[in-house]
Length: 176
Image (cartoon, rainbow, N blue to C red):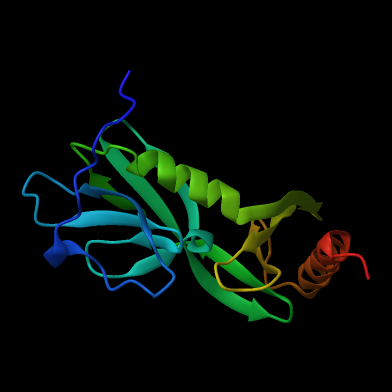
């Protein structure tokens, strides 16, 4: 058992431009060359291309033991009170020495979800309603993801979605 193991410091040239209150939680080299990193912070996951994916912007994270696969969210439609999201292309990262990074990613993505529920929609579809915590934002940010066979643009589906989102927002609102 390693009680006091020393985690290597992130090399300065690979360090992302952090916000003043942002701190690094874990990091790992990507691939075999060692010239790119993934960096987990309290705000999100810094990708090798310099983009930050907030924890609330990651639908799924899967760890195979060698590869971290991230499914980012992509905005399909903005509606009053919530956003309709779809899966963006999966991002895969080979991590030969992952250390704590996969655990931090999974923990942070999971912790960002404060509310989730699935609702069937007629005639044969469904919608998942999600309220997520966003770093630096008060309250929850609401989004939905439709099942593959749902007529997302049909007026009755939109009305039903509006109702289930409103119910979820009401159920999670702090007492007055």
